Amino acid sequence: MTSAGLDQFDERLLAVLQVQGDLTQAQLAERVHLSPTQCARRISRLRQEGYIQGYCAIVDHKKLGFSILSHTLVTVRSHDETANSAFRAFVQGSPEVIECYTQTGDADYLLKVLCRDLDDLSDFLERLVKATGGVASVRSSVALQQIKRSPRLFR
Image (cartoon, rainbow, N blue to C red; front, side, top):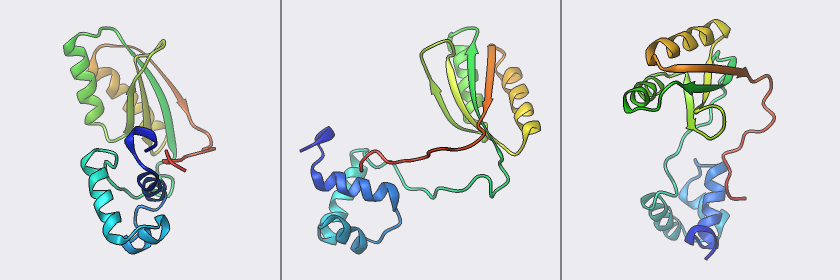
């Protein structure tokens, strides 16, 4: 067994699925040197145990007209339950927010925000401040160029 109680076949399955989640059972079995039945059983177990949380297509956001990717740091005034709930509800209801993290450091949250243009980003930021009511500061940095993007944990 290797990391997190997974054996080498589990890790091979995860490594392949991270890059090509649309392979058939037969193709996957051939890649990891298991039978299709063994692959199916292992994948089912990995899903049940939460190692595999789902599958999705990686879509090119620029081709869909979303040209602005912003990393936005948010500091809130208060950490009481009402303020936290309002902030989290706003984030959950905002399709522009594609990722959100609580974090250590000078900001409380890091948002990854995807917008069509700078006007959309500006509108989003105004809605953020108005909707939550407890924002102390917001700092956004617009990504200029993507250098690396990888969903891979196993190689």
